[in-house]
Length: 416
Image (tube, rainbow, N blue to C red; front, side, top):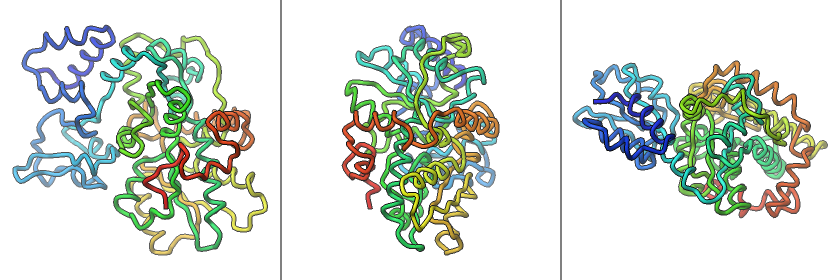
């Protein structure tokens, strides 16, 4: 019987060569569950079993580390994934000593959709992409590499992080009126939001009802091009869980990780560093620095200072990254041991640059993102004319209209 990794890479190669059906017909003595996972990933939880677990109960680290108790044994000892509870944090995969767990791979149906789609197909690239595919790969070269795969264009999600920075700053300015008020960022990290919604639900009223930059980019594209296919690409398995959430499932059609895209580049023998350098995107520094711990806090603080420089109650930030640090931060907040009024949590060490599907170490990723931030022509979204132009194109006459609870950048399930 084929090993899962072999099946995955052979099926991926066959799909890229448009002969997946022919390949499947040649398979003999395969694990039909594994094949179905690869062909129809949305039918399955985000974590897959590549083999039966035979670890003793006391050594099942995967069960112990899950902050959402989403992986559990039944009475016979067989492990299961609770799809509703799983946030895609990947901790169980990282702690599986037998290496029998893997994250959802959406690459086969994504490639099939790109090939068959009649409208525009957009790659939405996460702000953490700098240096992931080599330090010699500029945004323009990466855009050209995606076009070689079959995408019509690539958008930097950092531009939409600019918009969400404006929205979060406006929310803070409207709602934080006394020294006892506080706000928890709703941007970026779906693991952080899952903790708040599922475990610390009493804090939900302190979370502004903004969608993430990923969802904002997908909705914006579909508002302008209703027939477009949107594919988000980033370092995070949890984004696949977020894209499946029923109240925002209209935004992003597929989610791929950096490693899945690297697999495509490898098989197609595409070296993005050798591609033509296409036109640049227009995000500000504020949107670009979302990819590392503290970036959201800094972006919102700088934008708030531009929005209301004479504000008496200033934004005081506290941030945390990684499971333990985020849990400690929330518990300290509940216990009254904190003094900040704006809290940022990132489920991965280092922030998005430390995501489980990143290709390079998070410290290197942060350096790359910081350098890219310094190259931005504008420090904040208020200074960025492209943000205002995009908002106008989407029907927003003023930046204050971002507080409208019916706009495309609002998540209905988190409205206070």
